[in-house]
Amino acid sequence: MIYGKLWLVVRPTVGIPLFLGAVAVGSFSVHYMLVTNTTWVKKFLDGKGAATAMADTPTSTAAASPPTAKQ
Image 1 (cartoon, rainbow, N blue to C red):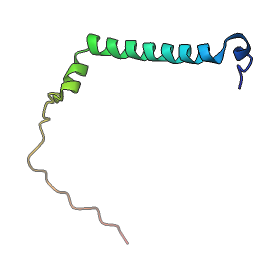
Image 2: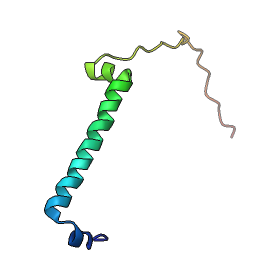
Image 3: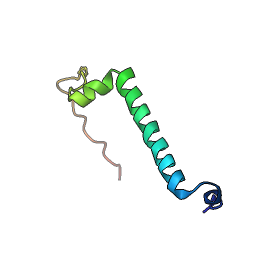
């Protein structure tokens, strides 16, 4: 472990819960900001699909004959 001597200064019974608590608070704050500052997350969580535009595609296409190899 690279930082093995850290536990000589900070006890593991204090350092590990403090580290895990900081990770939990950071994760909660990022997710909270995503939910409050975006519009698509709320729609996604509600299960509403995105409105997509249909592309104009030709109804029929002319099939070209495959090229023949000369022998």
